[in-house]
Length: 242
Image (cartoon, rainbow, N blue to C red):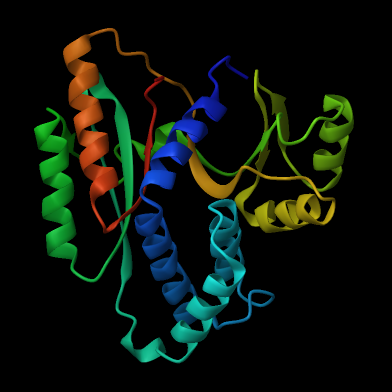
């Protein structure tokens, strides 16, 4: 495990999310609608919906808001026309970027994503051009301030629940799972009363890249900010060691 603190990134993201809570809830609302359309309103029989609910809870979305979203989506299935689309490309100095979007207008989203890359001196590549540098994993972050326990004890607990890997960072614990066993592990931690700061299936870089050049940092930050501000963009993954 590298010394790179994923918790610092999560914390940074969380602060941004708190400032844009409305956008986060809109994003999750769309994900609920698509998941219900694809697999029905019961999370026990709809793995994708269970994942979205876990994401909603880790973003402090109230339970009644989640329930309302599921009910609305169940009664509105025919009108859900969002589709998932993924873009891959390069930021300054070859930084790898993956963008997941959920859109009702692919042309609009493609133009906006391309513009964000271009304004940061990067470019959109072909599908698969950078995704091989990432691993799809379930990732659960536990804040040490929220859960003071013996690290070895916690490690045994998460590994017994089916996790693949456990690591201790300066201010957090990170639990990694196979995407297929993520929900099972998350549920086991929830039932054990372990508070999760973040719980989601994500793309984790195999290696991180440092940027020494100030202009490159500014350009990359511009691209990431533009992408995060786009209503169609669900998630942005990159291998920048920020």
